[in-house]
Image 1 (cartoon, helix red, strand yellow):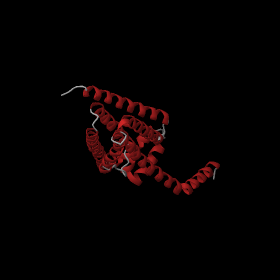
Image 2 (image 1 turned 90 degrees about the vertical axis):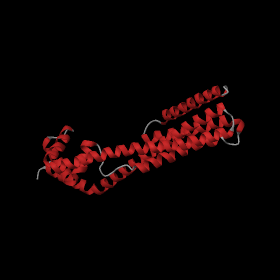
Image 3 (image 1 turned 90 degrees about the horizontal axis):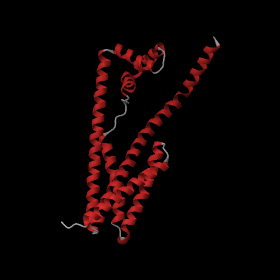
Image 4 (image 1 turned 120 degrees about the horizontal axis):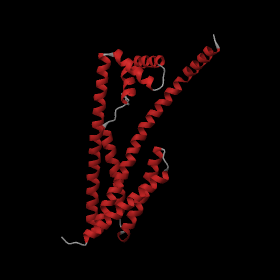
Length: 254
């Protein structure tokens, strides 16, 4: 046996020995990626709820200082925004899922009607990735033998056929996160501190957006400083503009 063959045998033995650990690690990464996607969606939903509700109640506060009017507007905005977010998310995810299922069904039909052509297509794909034709054919053959649909879906369509997002879960997540985010500015501006409710709302919103900006940045692996500044500046502009417009409109009598 040549030195090269011995090295190859040794490497194969190590790969076999590590196979269970590698499989477990891959499973954990897949599960973690799914959780992070949901967490990211939740942070964004909460962020939308904070900014939109804060802008709404600040606008009403600028036009009309009555606590009842502010509360009614805030609750209406919370409910309408949560339902709108949930409905939009359900529609969007449903459309994406329908498209993916249609693409998978088309791929399944092609595999059934002409498996040899599909094998050549998969080999060509891996050849374009930099493998030699012989190696690409071996890879394509082995992947096809294990799970042909999964191999083609991931390579050609970028779809994981074993994981489909639930529209219902996505809608529920958006509803809860938006409603949760909306509660903070609503509670801040309708609290017992009537003389300082504007200041309390601004402080509460900026603090909460700094937190969501920090969490969102950490999830995405980005620098938290920029995300925090971006979140707080957008919020400050939103509240300032809506309060100014509300104050201007409040000067008119209809």
